[in-house]
Image (cartoon, rainbow over all chains, first blue to last red; front, side):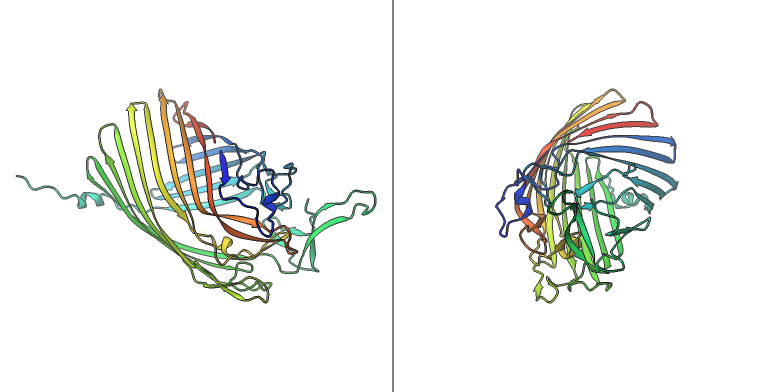
Length: 142
Length: 288
């Protein structure tokens, strides 16, 4: 992937981004990302998901920039796991664990991102069935 | 590294200097030898209570009508709306006061219409048009502790977002697609009002505007038997007024601000491979 600031100009006053080796590259956009994942449905109502995503080292940052990309974030793999249970028609329960390996993910060397995160959610849907049948105007017979 | 003394981790959350004297963020240490003998390198000090306490309530509702007009035409129309109440100690229109919660409200409305038209047995088109409006209740922002109030130039933003897509099914297991579309993104409340990020001091930008994007994509999908499929697509996204964080390096407070980048472009290739050995298992791999 390529991510470029097409209207780049040195800021006044000078911005930290100007110190990147390629300041036209948009900050925190990796050149390469790759992911692998698997989904398992052990029961008709249960879905389990596990995935990992690799993010290459950032080519440009907006904090602590330097000309050699020393200490630039990136080059890490984030792994997530999720579970979704279909409780009843129109109702489901979900659990999600992000960054299960507790990997160090930073956008800057002094600003740590949250570690392993846990989410619990529920979803409800109301379906009004066959509504469109009432909308169809049947042509009169010739 | 950040020493544990600057941030308190209470098992489930971080508190940024909740009590005690002003704390200083250390970004590293000088070498062991002279002249500084391993002394810490401080970048900023944070007063007591200068952490972000947040309470947020969001209420949204939407409705959609899916109407099969005839065998070749399917029409979807809908409305959406939401309101968000945000009370934080940092995201405020006035310069933040420690432990005092601000009150910002954001509302959004959207209406959309989409038509899926099966032109021939092999060619399908999709046309959609969406209108979005988003606004906040503040019209002025204070950009320093005793500074003047500046008028927020874009307290509400709106846009029409059209999209056209074509899908050509060349064979039962092979299809090609192409699409063009425009979209927009309103500045988030954090981008409008952020005041602090670790050692950096946020300086709200009263002129911050929406960002908009024109997207192009061409792609191909191929099925190999019942279990394996492959997808590849090239994309190009042209941005106008892309919202980015900019840190000004030679200011004593290490000020940063969200600004609009006039023109930006992101383009590349996406590929994905899906394998379904049984009905219970799915494996996938992707690269961008």
